[in-house]
Image (cartoon, rainbow, N blue to C red; front, side):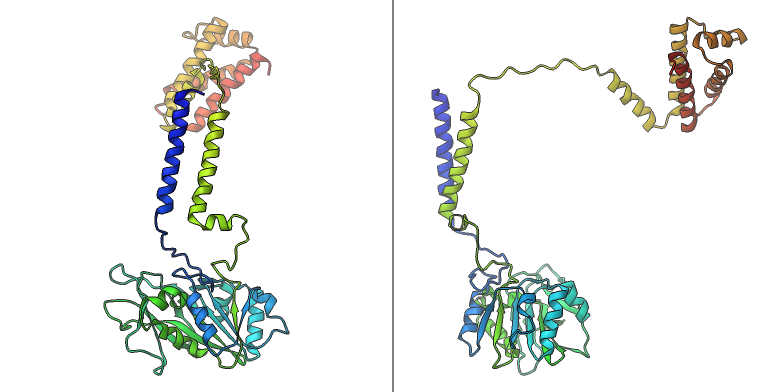
Length: 404
């Protein structure tokens, strides 16, 4: 191993160590990934909410299986609580959920978007509110009930998508909460529904389109925001078991990857990356042949064919069929002169008979070909179909000689 090789390898390793140290010493970036998991303390986790639910006078149980498996005929009564950014409940699960609600139970669904099956069944339309002025999109939340409504709305002090219910059945469904985008005031001036209730049999179904209002960030960012969550959850039936869904979650409740512990810690993660990068560099340098391989010099290619195709393509693209026909006729005449030693400048009856004899082509076809070439030469323009006809006639003439 030469000194230059050793120095280069040492320099690369030193740079990797320096980069690893700089990256590991940087503070962690704020993770704004939507999770809504009970164990996540990130801004859009739900650790604060679920911890507060434990302190309430409620019997809570976690459900880690799909609703289709939980909501069997023997499913216990109570309230089923869902919280996630998306709730894509399919038709089979929705059917069991509605059958369970009809018996006098309650379902509380909080998400930005719901599955097509639920939206179509309830005949709802959900859209994202767009700022009418400016680019700020900080949502405001409030309730409709005079006993629960606050004079100043609750502010989610961060630009965020604001999903609203733009269509619902006002006779069957009751609007319980409204939202709007912040416009220099905490008053909701252009309300959109984001919280409603629907009766299904003997039970109730609640839908809320702002899961961010139940996140750690909202509950801890402003003093008093927790009141909004308390007032929304005041609709939970008292004395019934609250079943907390843990299946429909953007954030996993647990991780089964064997590298989870290693990659979760920044220092261990970058140590692992350094090991992998160093291994790749070692294999790259040590795996190279000590003697440089002899390069294979390919012979020069004959580009005449490609050049001809390129030039022909230019004529075809410009649709100059007259020039192509003229060149094709001239090439054919040169072919007759060089192959059959015939004078193509003086064409008489004996010329056609001699050409037919030496080329083993019927005299009529020779005359037809010559008539076609004369006509095309006299024309000012040639169509694509006439050019194809000329090409077929010349090809047919040559095939008689070749015996094909």
